[in-house]
Image 1 (spheres, rainbow, N blue to C red):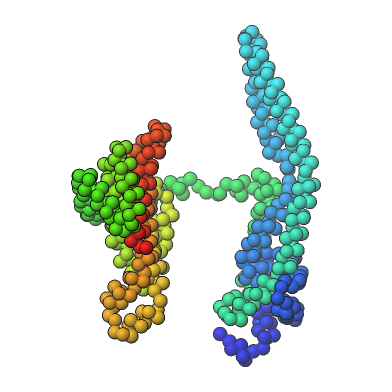
Image 2: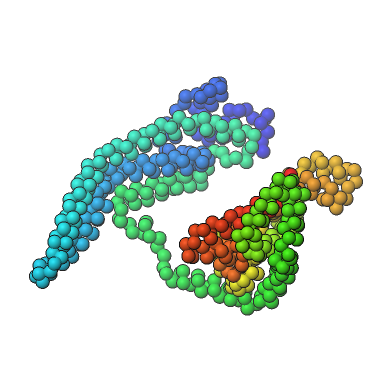
Length: 498
C-alpha cells in the first residue's frame, strides 16, 4: 500500500482512472464541491454502456444496465426484423390441420347420412371463425412492429442518458473508497476490459438473435446435450451408493440402534405414561418457563388433543420430534462452540449446512431410505438433516458476538479456559443459542408430515391421510394439533430464553 502523503491527489487520480486524468479531475472536483447532486455527463459511459461500467469495476451497475440495454435492443430488433405475427400464424396452421380433419369427418357423415352432420358443420364454422380472428390478430401484431421498435429505441436512449449522468458520480465514489482501501481494483487492466466487452456482447448478440429470429438457432433454446450423459451419471451415483451401503452397513446399523434407544425411551415416557402425569408435567414446565398464562394455554391445547382423540398420536409426534431435536442439539451446540473459534473449519462445514437446508426434503429422503430403510429411525435422520443446522449457526453467531473486551478482562484476572467458556462466553451467547434451539425444534416439527411418508407415526399420518382422501375436517383438526404442539414447545424454549 502506497503512502498518500508521498503522492499528490492528482497523481493518485491519474493512477486510478488510467485515461483522461484531466477530465476526471475537473469532474470529480465539481462533484466534491457540491453537497447535492452535481450534473455531469460522461459521453464514453453513455456510448459504451455496460462495457464502460464493467471496465471500471462497477459490476453491480453493469449488470443492471446490460439487462436494460438488452431489453431495449431486443425490442428494437423485433420491431425491425422480427416476425411479430409468427406465433399467431403457428396457431392458424394447427387449427387448419384440425379443420382439414373435420372436413373429412363431415364428408363421411354426409355420405353415411349420419345424424351429426349439423354438429360437424357448426364445429367447422367455429374453427373458420377462429382462424379469421387469429389472422386479424397476426395482422395487428405485424402492424405494431414500428411501435415496438420505437419503444425499444426510447428505452435505449433513456438508458444511455442515465448511464452518462451516473457514471462520474459512481466513479468518484469508487475513487474515494480506493483511497482508503487499495485492494479495490483500479485502472483499466486488459483482462477486465476483455471480460466486460465479451460478456456484454455475448448477452446482446445471443438475446437479439433468439428473440428477433426465433428458431434460427435451435441450440439457443435446447441445451446441446446427450441422453447418455444423464444415464451414465445415474449409473455412477447408484454404484457409489451401493458401495457405501455394502461397506458401511455396520455404521448405519449402529446409528439406527442409537436412535432406537433414545426413541424407545421417549416413547415410553410420553406414550405409555398415564396422560394426567404427562399433562401436569407439560403444564408445570410451561408455567415455570413462560408464566401462568402460557400454562393455561398449554392446558387448553392438551385438552384439545385429548378430547379429539389425538393424544396418543401427539405424544408419538413429541417422542419422534424430541429424539431428532435432542440429538441435533447435543451434537449441534458442541459443534458450534468448536467452529466459533476456528473460522477455517466453519468455512469448510458451512457449505455442507447450506446443502442440508436448501436440498428439498424429498431428495435427501432417497439416500436416507437406502441407508436406513423406512420407519422411525429414517424419519429421525431426515428430520435431523433438515432441522439440525440452525443450532450450529446461531451458536457460532452468539459466541462470535461476545465482546472481546469482556473476554480479555476475564483472562487478565486469571480466568481459565473452562471458566471463560462457562462463566463468560456461554452466558453472553445464551440468547442466540436458545434461539437456535427454538429454530431447530420448529424446523423439526415442520417435518412431521414429510416424515410420515417413510413410516413415521403420529399426527403427520392423519394429515397425510387427509391429503390422500381429501378429508378436509381431519386434515384441519390434525393440523391444529401440530400447531398446538409447536406453540407449547415454542413457549417453553422462548420463555426460558427471555
